[in-house]
Amino acid sequence: MIWALHGFLGRGADWDALRAACASENLPAFHTPDLLGAPPTHRSLAAWGDHFAAWVAQIDPTPVLLGYSLGGRLALHAVLARPALWRGALIVSTHPGLSDAAERAARRADDARWAARFQNDDWDTVLADWDAQAVFGGAARTLPRPASAYDRSALASALTDWSLGAQQPLAPRLRAIPCPVRWIVGARDARYVALGRHAVAELPRGELRVAPTVGHRVPWEAPAWFAEQVVEFVRAACSV
Image (cartoon, rainbow, N blue to C red; front, top):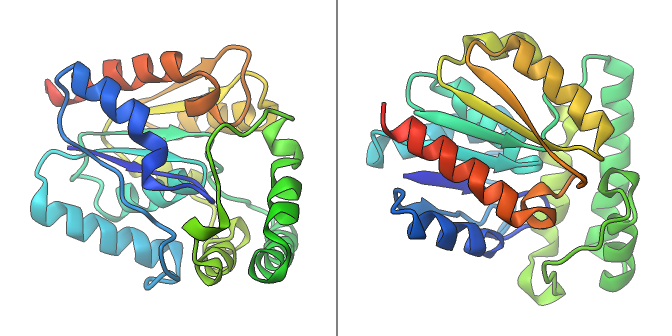
């Protein structure tokens, strides 16, 4: 099966077009859990990864994992929790962790400010400010994000509990991942291209794929290109 983890503000439905593309290629079943329907029960990234990997292991002997942004960080923790479980992993626009303690503290403080805004501010205003962040490169958001679709307490909890500042740097641990990993970034997302290069250098079976002309939101800025990458990778992983 293919397990796809969305990013912050994402929903399982974000993967509908990719699900259809995979189904048309007769790939395995596609599962898209909603990660933000309620405040996280497993509050640390590591605890979430342990729980998720244990759950998948009970029902799927040959899983392939896909994670975008926050979902990519959760995916890395799940792979590291049970490295032998996974047939392969696609990691998209993902930060493997900050090595500097001061940077982590600054990020925790920034995410706490965002958490307060998502909890309390006018929805349209905070959403517009979120989309205006430099990481998105000015690309227009194409997916609907109505306030009615979210538990705002869950968004606030995800920002603090799963903050990049609360994450231990994973780069030194990536060499322990035995399965193939395709790390995907957008060419216009320069910071994440650099992070991807460093990550792939640590992975025993890692490869970097760069989507031309697009930024951070690769799956939705370049959907046809991205679907090709996923189909090719999953087909190879599931043929082993």
